Length: 301
Image (cartoon, rainbow, N blue to C red; front, side):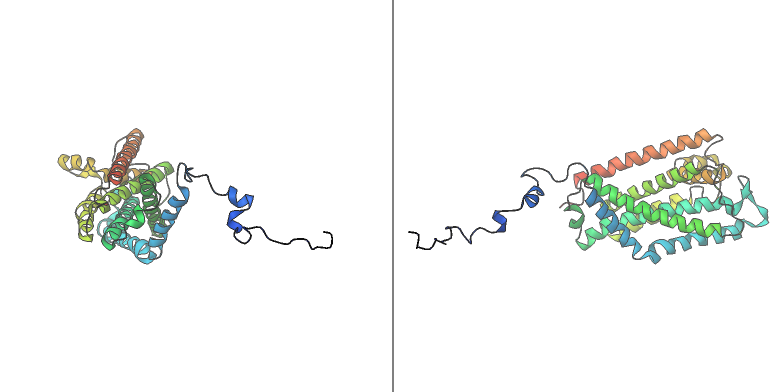
């Protein structure tokens, strides 16, 4: 009837349906369909996050990780220039300080690349936080790339600190004859030691194991690689041993970039062959580390 009020009864499901039952079109469209992968090829966000975490870790204690190694390496320069650099001694056509400076720079870079990459996994294994590396949605290649890139970053910072100090050192000429060789051998050498450090941290079960690798493998190979001398002064037997040392090619190639001369060979082609050889060594070592990571050796109980 016309005089009766209109019904205001609510439907049976009134008050039951909420915003989630009627999502806005824009919100509904932001979620992928069920079963559709969110990360398609490379997890760039995760890779960047792990890289920045590793960089911030060593940069937070930069006095210990950057400046202290740079000062220690500069002490080598002081000692050897005082002991061997007097009397106008020249090596490869330059004074001794200019000869030894590039070798010290790249030696410091390589040693710190090893130290950085060898710490993260080992500390995680000892502290029981290794799951923080293994659980995130990162492939073995992405995990390896982030750790190695962070180690190379530390190596570059140490190298820049050393180069800046040596620019101010009296009697040292830091002009570059072949910038490509400086960049290539510096990066390739840092990657080489970062991969070795990563492999060492996977193998080691305590810090003593890692220290043993540093003291009995890395330090002797770097100090006996022609950093402070040319191998032509050695006997044929020790020359052959030096040429079997990959550190020798990195240090001599890096020095070639500054001086335009090296004891690798008599021609620039010999240096180019060494550059290609170091690149191949890095590639093979990266494959080994990748396969070890994929196998879960000493990582997954």
